[in-house]
Structure formats: C-alpha cells, structure tokens
Length: 267
Image 1 (cartoon, rainbow, N blue to C red):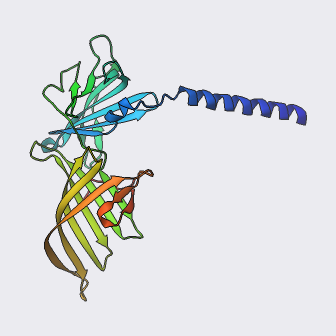
Image 2 (cartoon, rainbow, N blue to C red; image 1 turned 30 degrees about the vertical axis):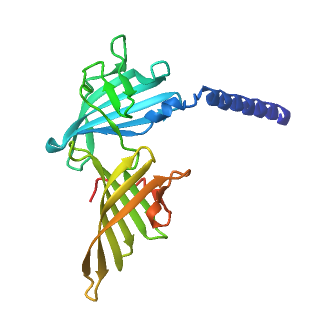
Image 3 (cartoon, rainbow, N blue to C red; image 1 turned 45 degrees about the vertical axis):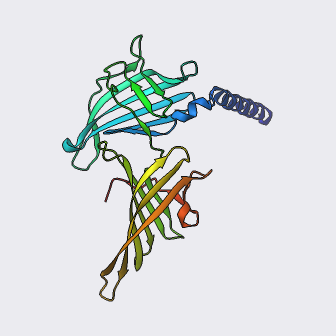
C-alpha cells in the first residue's frame, strides 16, 4: 500500500510539473517594439491605461463626466501587430457608470461586450511625434483625439522611516489642465512641510518633473498649528527603480512604496 501511494504521489507531482511548464510556455514575452504602448496616456477629458497581460494588451479608456458624477468607459483586448506597429483589438466593450451615495462606481449595462468581427477592429497607433491615436471602429469615439504619454505615476507613496508621503493625482479635464498635482508631506504630527506642486512627465527621461511652493506646519503649546508660508520655488524629480519603488531624486534618492490601500482621489 505504501509503495502504491508513493507511485501515485510521484505521478501527481509529475503531472503538476508538466502543467506548470505548459503554462509557462503559453506565456508570450512582450516584444521590445510593443513596450512603448505599455504606459498611461491622456487627452483632454480622457484617461487611457495600457497594460501587457501575458499574451496581449488590455486597454482601458475613461471619459469622466465630473459635472454629472458619471462617465463612460471602453475596454479592449488587443494584440501587437508588428507589421503595422500598432495594437489591434480582438474584443471590445463599452458601458456608462455613475456613483452611489458611498462614492462607489456603479456600472450600467454594456452597450456592447463581445468579440470583434470584421469591420469592428479598433487600432491604437503611435506617430513619429510619440503621440497615440485611437481609431475606434464601432462608434468612432476616438475621432480627433490625440493622447500624450503621461507615465504611470498616479497614486500614494510612503516611506515611514523617512517620514515622507507623496500623493500624485492626474488632472486632465481640459487642454489647459494636463498635468499631475503633486503633494509632498515631510515630517510628523509635531512639525511637517507640505509641498504643493504641478508635475509634467518627460517621456525622454522617464521622469516626473514637478515645481511648486511649500508651507511649514508647527504644533504650538495649545495643540494648534502655526503656519509659515514659504515664497521660494522648489523642484522635485521622481522616477521608478528596478523594484518599482518611487524614487524621490531631489531628496537624496529616498525610495517610497506604493500604498495599495490609499484612495488617491480622497482628501
């Protein structure tokens, strides 16, 4: 009986190993030419996220309607067409959404959500100027839109040991508002400095370049804060290292970790 159990266990382990090897072989590496799509993009009033997923790309586009607390989102599964140097969709979906009283996004029924047939393939291409176009085959939603590479910086990042928190929020509601709001807090509850900055992504360096001013908050004997406004202008440069930590370059290269629990849009 022990021998039989041993044989069965060996067979099970061999099958598991084969399954893992097969799964690994099914993963298609991302091509170098396709990597230029794998970032966040923005046009006035639109946000686009492009992610590589094992065999292809997931493209998500959001058109928020801030005034009416609603919006429209598109999602595509795409593959990279090397001959055309473009992403082409194999399936597409479109739906609207609203927010409930708890600020939870509630999606409506999809206008469509299925495999693309002939004449329904959407194409994403990057021109010589580095900007991306969205050729939407189902509703021509991308007509006249040109998307800029804005990097993938939005989020809340922390280094508790260094007493640093960085909050980066994309603001792209119009042609006049195409930048990141960058908020930096350095210090503790007794005394800290708040930096309010405007940041722009530089695709040539891969860095977020920000500029702004600072205010110092110091707790007094009554427990309230005395505020000192600083009129000097400050620069801040951010990039990512091999561990995907945010590097605060102008603060001696302090590394900050992304906080997955934080809501970047909350106050």
